[in-house]
Amino acid sequence: MSSTVSNVKIEPMSVTWGSDVAQVQTITCVADATDSLDGKYFYLYTALNAAKYHFWFNTSGGSAADPNPGGSTAEAVALTTNDTASAVATALAAVIDGLAGFTASASGAVVTVTNAAVGYSTAGFDVNSGFSFAVSTMGNSAIDIGLIDGAVETSFKESLVDVKANQSGNNVLSQIRAGKEVEISVNFMETSVSQLRKLFTQGGGNAYTPAGANGTEVFGWGEANDFTQTLVQASKLVLHPVALGSSDHSRDMTFFKAYPMLDKLSFAGDKTMTVPVKFKIYPDQSSNSKIRYCVYGDSTQTMT
Image 1 (cartoon, helix red, strand yellow):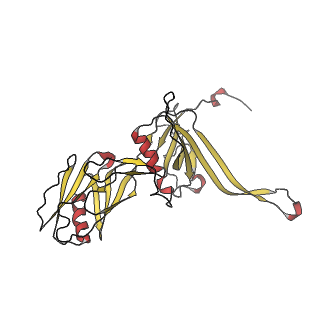
Image 2: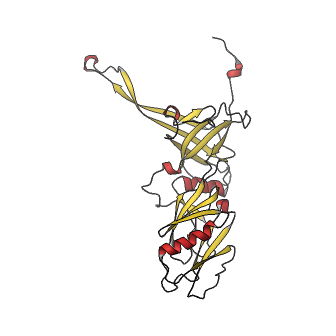
Image 3: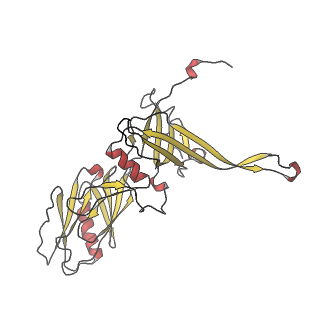
């Protein structure tokens, strides 16, 4: 066998995490009861929080003016007194859909709002309208996670079931593959607010904006996601060799569905803050069954 030092590498990696996805949320409206919605309002944000809007209601029998809470653009929604929840949703969807930052449609009392641009956005929230808000698809974007402390470590495990026969006693004749487990460990060094928000909101936590004109988004750990699927928060993780150009994907390692499991946060006066994260890898059912967990090489090709 011939040997060559060209096959010996020190391979530092840049890590890109996320997929370019537009945020989708639903707004469940209520009916107007004798101008009960007159002057009431709520907030919506475009992707990456580029713009903040407050939508306020002007009923035909009411006399309210724009509540003008400050720091947001006003959008008036004209209603007829005693409009049903469905009629309110239709009127609201038409106003939202007319803005460049969103598309919207109504079905019954529910308005589905999709951000025009990909990326995270503060979820819409109510002030006093009585409407309900839910994010059905969290906005996301592919980002370089920045500086990393130590090695990026991957682990591959197979679950094997022994094949034995009465005639051969306890001798293992073969094994049958019964499953796989893939994980990646990364120590984040860059701990910006946006970086921590992404780790929390994609890793079992949530963001929350308190009601009120001056409410500002916070994020953390709670029970809202208990008993829900983790797969919906998993996204692509790509390891790219620093030695290669950005367009050379020949030695990329791509994990299609990576779910972050935040380990701990440590604060100290004499050490650099790092955030250790273990990514659990799930199979991507839309990819070819031969490479559904991960692939080494150019993953920009069609993988079905």
